[in-house]
Image 1 (tube, rainbow, N blue to C red):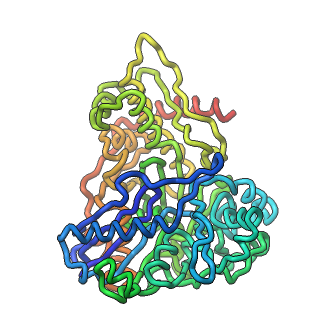
Image 2: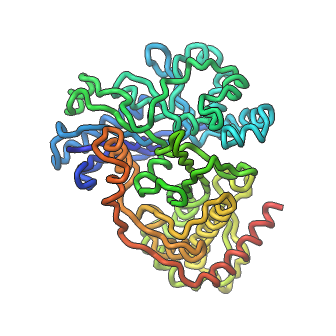
Image 3: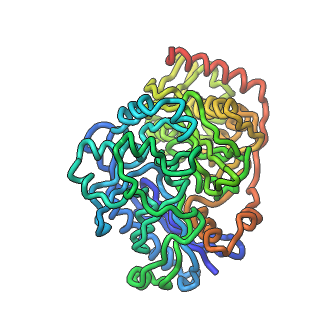
Length: 491
């Protein structure tokens, strides 16, 4: 029996087929080969055409099937992971009304800030666990204020994964996790937030049917099944945002467990059994994939914008023709602390962990007689690890204090130098696992279809290896020096 997982990313779509009995991947495929287009009509805007996601999904599934490594008719359930916080609007005929306003679009920041003040900061944090911020509800309010003719035609509001499920099944559903991600969910009342809906003037009819996250969200249409060489009637049994889904893939489900990713941006995602929130709104709290009213599992998410993108930038500046592994070797030749050279990695816009300040990226204490390209490379990697420490300290202040952090062996964690520095400065053991978003979506599909239990899904997840912290005192001193430099930009 096989499971199909789809990961609706910003730059591409990935499909994976996993054997339900062994939880081992059978095949995977990515489409398109080049990065998908992001439309930016104005500074700070970011949109994508949802129909392009659907086109890419079909290509990715067919590409996966064409590997010939499995019988597509044996696929028994479909799961979907997706880029979080996007806004998709359809009319009564399921026609897309406008491009999706995606996660990195910042046009609704001021709208969310006003809602935070008007609804009340204490009420927002205690009931929504977040400021309304720049999330889906605020983006919908922007459409209502600026595109009233489009707003009037809205039948349902969706997140990106809901849209792909609709294209597969003709059904539109949501979940508590999805609604919390869009800042529509009241955790105290356990219902769609009256405060949010009334403040923005939204009608509750635009919210799709709420179903358990692990459940049937519709069955595969016959015409789609024929086109994709799949069996008609396969259920879509799982939909989750990319970070909760990544945590599922890493078997991060219980209180105190923590996952980390270090791609273009960096994320720390920990689990709490409390309705936890940060008084300063530097981190976000959402219903995790296994959240229920009886057993609350809240995902505490901290995002750092300036991580892998800083590493990619320094590569483009200093080593265009060299691989990341070669650059890593150069950086490893330099002693910890890069002989006094310090970098600040926040050059990718406003950082929520820094109270939404834009401070830019910086190098400090450059000595022309000492510092070379390898010093720059080391300083960049160390600064990214230090920013994770800064974020993890915020989470520690909110009750998440891990001794072990789980991560996929991907992106910056492919660097032994970065991984060891991360372990050292955070004083945690880092466990590495294979698998990615599409793998997690396939496992989620198995749980939602009743083919796997949550316990079964984690049983075969063995770490590829681990890195234990070393030289903790030295790296703590280096972090304090870095933090002092950071504070100069914040004061």
